[in-house]
Amino acid sequence: MSDPINSDPEVARPKTFTTYPLSSLFMLVLAIAISLGWWVDRSRIQNKPATSQYDINGPLYVSYELRMTDGVQKKSGVIAASGICIHGETFTIHTESGGVLLSTASLVECSWTKRSID
Image (tube, rainbow, N blue to C red; front, side, top):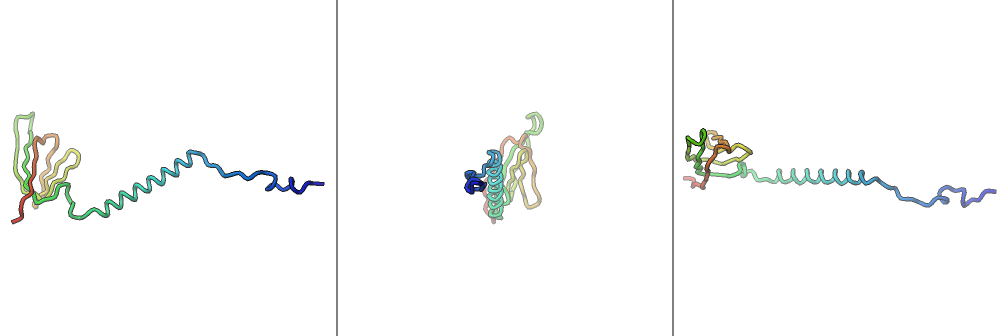
């Protein structure tokens, strides 16, 4: 005679919880963090106002001084600008007729002031 209690596999073994390796949990958290970071970055880009076209918005007067070769020659100027963009090794002064591209390596001094529109 067989014992009906011990013959049933569901009753004979205690219930166990499913376990996952720690690396799988880490990958899940990493995927959620990357997705959340991407979503936050996208929402910031979409909510950026259109008026902030440049790093520094105008109308401006920009005065600058450049070292040309070995510190011997210097070039300077004052420009009526609509904005300034600073990216890495370039400094771009945007004007109505285009722009002036300056190298930050040769830039000695640069200042700008707001100008009134007449």
